[in-house]
Length: 521
Figure 1 (tube, rainbow, N blue to C red):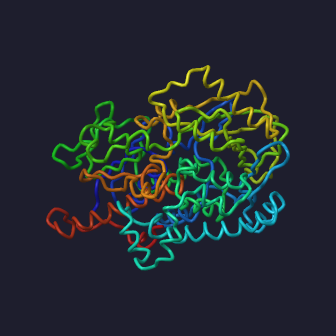
Figure 2 (cartoon, helix red, strand yellow):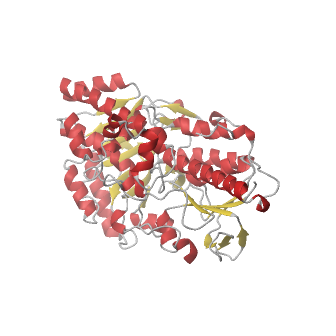
Figure 3 (tube, rainbow, N blue to C red):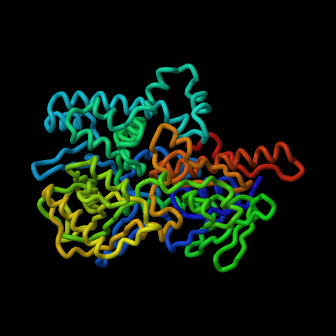
């Protein structure tokens, strides 16, 4: 059965849903309020250069290969990417650094040289455990259907498979679990940082999040043009399958006069009729009434205390010196516990850990030299998601910039001063993504049940579905794509059920294309 579908928001989840649903023969219109597609993945012009903004790490490439295959296409025909030999470079001071490599044995050797034989053995054990957790959760949870409680997932794993249940370590604290693998606090800090990939505090997260390290160990890819180029590729794929993408147009209301979706109203008053609406945005925006009262009742509200991290992000075109950058670089604070205590208290950290993406290093097959007097960089510091209550005045942003520079300088990296840049604060993210406080990852993964509390594809309002990095299964580029896949799969199932039980209402059968059967990721 062919349906009229409107998708709100052109983030990775919305684009994925649009491509899959259009490939299955549905009448798809994607509406994006900004002038670009990709959501957080976009470009910011600084000093006459396009600096890639938004997420920078591309993992789980197979998710996207399967997406394109399901639509009768090949990923490599839409993007140019190469695997990074160095996953990331890490520094704590100016006395050297530690690289993690695509080759895990090379990483193990580097850790041994950095922190000793016991640390190398700890890394072997950690890597084995992270892989086990990933393999237990990959199909039943990451790629599976949304469950509001652990029980359905336990059935998919195997209710009596106690070994796998215990392997997930949902009730163990991540920071303490890492302490069991690494006596060196620097390594505990390095691998604890993976919790921030889903916007979470490593001191409050379950040990289950160790699986994130394995997703990187499976391969990190560098895309020419960054993640924004991937978004453009999925958008092009969706359009080739018949989807219409309308940018610079905001949806003001989801229309459901009789308890079922009938369409959307745009900010300029235009009405778009629809049988189904997919909201690719933070469910908090729905719950807080961003899209009207009917949609507000469709999902539960989320207290601000449950929000994920936000960030201070500098987009810059600058000269660098004193530290041999690679594409992905992390410069750690000296007191990680205090850093997150300050964030919990609603303050940017006084001595932050700093992530720096040197976009011209290792890109375009050029190796690790900058290749120019200035280079394009994105710098990220974790911050509280309080952009709806705190304005971040100039004196505060200037202080945060000094503190960020101090961390880099302590580790041996100098940035030109003044530095051509733009700065995004939690207040900036709140303006881009209203009703979120600037939270960039939806709900934080704090406590064993947090993952089951993320919004799934189905809502309380008939015909309204959700997708995106703030929904099930988790935050991040591949997870947002998996959410889009899950939304498309759930819609297909619901339409098939409608056809089965109400044949008179759906004449003509289904428009699902056989080429997609069995091909979805």
